[in-house]
Length: 353
Image (cartoon, rainbow, N blue to C red; front, side):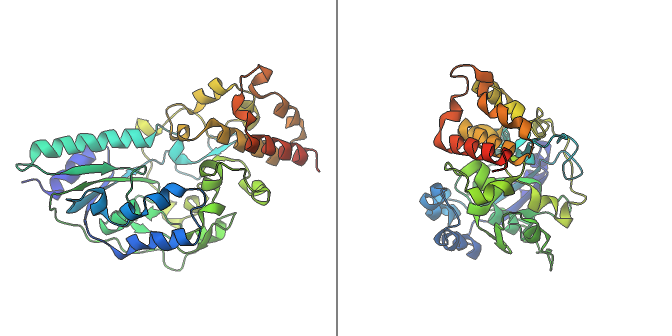
């Protein structure tokens, strides 16, 4: 008989740091997505609206689901909150920790498939299974809470009391009936450090995120230009934001992983001006193999222009005139209206206008 404990043991062997089981039922929290969407908090992420019905019920993701196996994988590679490799320049970019290593979608999905293959070999009975990791239509946080992985903090991240919140969430919906774990207990208490620290006011209340104000959304999800009032608030963020996690007391002694998958080439701390001068091919080499390749290169270009404008370093203004070091067609990603608007704004900022 295939047991939850045996699955947990095999999950650890495959590189997962946490593994728990939740029943495949319609938890009340799954319905909150519709209210969140109705408030307009999703912005341009229309894929959430299109998949809301599936996300509301795990049995629409896998009709035969009886259990949900949830994994947590630590991706944090540094103990403190991030100056070790950031660099000292006024245009040193900030890249969220999850995007500094390999593309977690692929790495973790490969591990999940390997776990399912092992489960099928070990089980005396056939069963259905479907893996999920971020890009799939499952509300991972809800099942992580009910599988005992951690509670959903006021910053909307799942927090494990022993490991912190620098966790990739993933899992397997299965027709197997497995012994469920107890849900995690909320231990945020009266703390509001994450809400208070958010520079854009995206955390409008505990566990209420207006994504349209979130730096992660502004640097990654929106295809339109970043609203001018919010550009200075981005400071040096080129991709995502870790502020609400970095200030969390549960991350003061957060786990650090030695997994080579999350120790990628240097991205965080590079010069925005130096990256701007690279050709599109050269810029792609910097982000190749990471989760940063999931959106058009023009969004990164747009963010780099904003960072240059925020640098306060007037000597960088000339850099904006030579994307791709001036080589013809080397930086076609700069030709979109959103990038051109960001460049014009950056010039104005550096000129003190």
